[in-house]
Length: 103
Length: 103
Image 1 (spheres, rainbow over the protein chains, first blue to last red):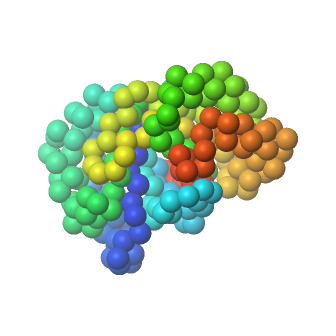
Image 2: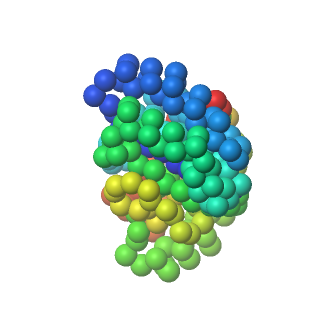
Image 3: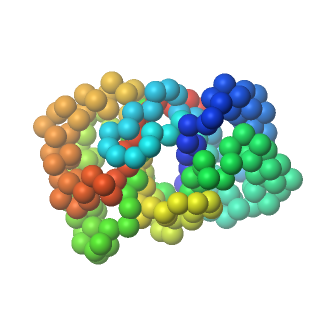
C-alpha cells in the first residue's frame, strides 16, 4: 500500500483554510483515480517531541507509487495541485510519497 | 481510528539504525496492547516539496488516542520509549498522535 502524506503548518487564517480544504479541496481530491482511502487528522494533534505541531495531516492511500503518479497526471490530479496552492503555499506543506509495508 | 506517526531523520549510521529498528524495536513495539496495525515506509521516500526527506516513517494504528496513551503506560510501552532512544535521539524524531477520520 502506498501513501501520500500531506502535513500542513498552521495557516495564517485557519477558518479560511478549513473552508477551502473541506468545502473545495477534499471533494476534488476524493475524485483522484485509484484513491483507496483518504484520512484527515482530527484536532488536537499531539506532538510528543520537538518541532512545530502541524495543523492538519492528510493521508491518501493508493495501491502503489505508480498509482499515485498516475492519479496526479490526470485532469483531476492537476486540478488538485493547482487548488492546493490556493489555500496553502508550498513552504507550509510537507508532501511525502512512499510505499509502506504492514509489519 | 487514531494514529501515532513517527518520522525519523536520516541517522548517522543507517545500517546500525536498521538493525536496531527491525531486529529489536519492531518486535517489541508489535507487542503494544491495542495496536491494530503497524506500517513502515519502504525506500525511497519521495519528497515533493521543501524540507528534509525523512529516513523512515512508521504509522501505528489504534482505536483511539486513549488507547495509545494506555499502551504507552504499560511495561511494553515504557520499554518501547526507552529502546527508541537507543537508536534515535529525540531531536531526530517527530512523534505525532491524532485521531483521524476517513473522508
